[in-house]
Length: 171
Image: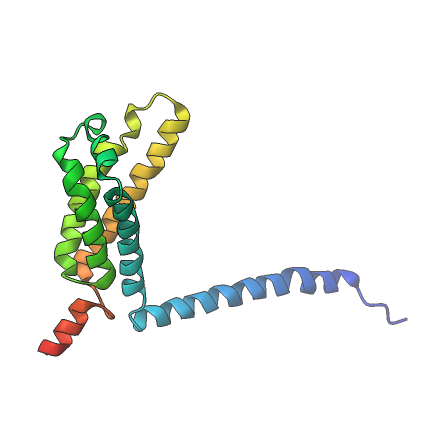
């Protein structure tokens, strides 16, 4: 009497539409990323985000240099590093954010991250599991930031940077 098979409706409604929706979403994201790379959006956005991390962290240290200096001995570093690190971090962050001398700044910040990682995030020195896990995460976060600095060194600042504006003016 014209009763349709509910199994087919369920199959179409629950499986095929779900798979189709996921496929369309993945394709949409893929096309957006392709467009973003072609328009050179990804590099400058990444550069600004990396720079911002250093600006805000450096600013906090600049606002309490004596407190930061006091932490140097337990990190195994001379106190003078406590006076050098905050301005390097803050100014380096500004340079990255604005795209000023990006390749040189990326090398300076790479060295900064290496020193910070091996002096402040030595997770292997912690017996407490919670502290070890926290420092493990901080250490490997820094390793990923090292990768970002290497990428900036290789690719340069990209569009929307002081370096790009100076190159256009010369060019």
